[in-house]
Length: 240
Length: 277
Image (cartoon, rainbow over all chains, first blue to last red; front, side, top):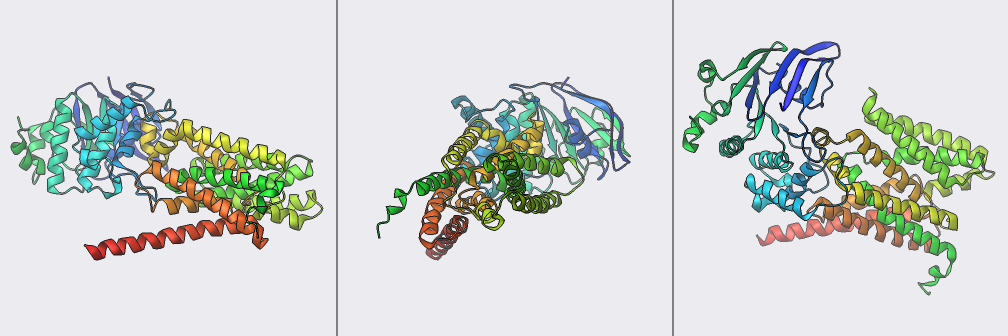
């Protein structure tokens, strides 16, 4: 089991945001976390990894390597651009940092970082400032940061939001490769996924609760319209 | 005029060593503070350090250690208020800020016979007040800053860039934040004699803002900022000797001059490059 939430509740200022959520995600699963705006999808994602305190219930996470959790988060928004220049290599390198990290990077770690950057196709941008990347390149750099630690479960918060068509195609292709290579994922989306054919499972949140948890249904596909993935996926050979 | 005459005086040798330590180390801490948008943290800590000096003078202890204890306490308190309480970060800082300096002025005035000159030497630095025991403390604390950053630099960087991601990675973000706050407190103490408590924060921040204009990476920024900090400290101290003013003002103005020169040069180069293309 990669993550297990039991009777999870989240409250903010006395108001219930999530109520009695039970959730298990296993190895090899690629889960779509769907729901309308404000249904608590991102809150659930953040509560699972401890970024938002839970008011009741429990969460258990798989253990990773070298004191890490085995879970990596790809946020919807990049860290705020600061005054300090930061290269793509340096950003990805932070994915390898753990509470046991002392001194600089080893040669092996440098190789791991280059491999992760290579996987997302950003080799030529490695020494460039991450603030100079386009939206799609930035999302790929954040995925590389998640991949570099060899996390078993990737949590992606609205990975296609705000991207242009070309970038969506690149990120969708990358996620398909991640699935093929055995990575488990929980992907948050505010509308029925552009990526539905990628998923092994759909969880719908509505009115603070899980209202559906199972395999993707036909209705999920029928409800999907104007989806870039459906337009792009046949070209990429991703559809079954 | 023999420009090397200033090195003939023992107090100036001490002052140069102390200024070099603060010039080299303060920007190394500042680079993480700027990244975390905590540029004013050093200011708040500097104010509460004055309270520590007042307590040390009242109890006949060495002011530098009083300042260190109070600064560390203040740093941890600010970090606690910023993260755990419902008080906003800048409000928490201002509480420490005003409480620290008010208590410091009161206690220093009671604890010393000549409150005015005593306060001035701590607030704006003083060339003649660096004793040999102070110097050992400054060098030791400077070494502690460098060792801590060498060991924990990656963790400090990861938490400064994206604390949420660092938390998910399994890092203790609160602990690393406290380490950064304590490093800031130690830096304030190191710079207390050469630059002064009111201006030491400037030598943590201004060289970093200058260096980021020249750098392409986080690592480069830290190295360049340290070099600019050292140049500012040594040149500022030299000006201070010849003009006979507190060194804090000349060191910070030199750092600002470096910032202005780098900004003008960079803007000129960009205009030239644009013109060619």
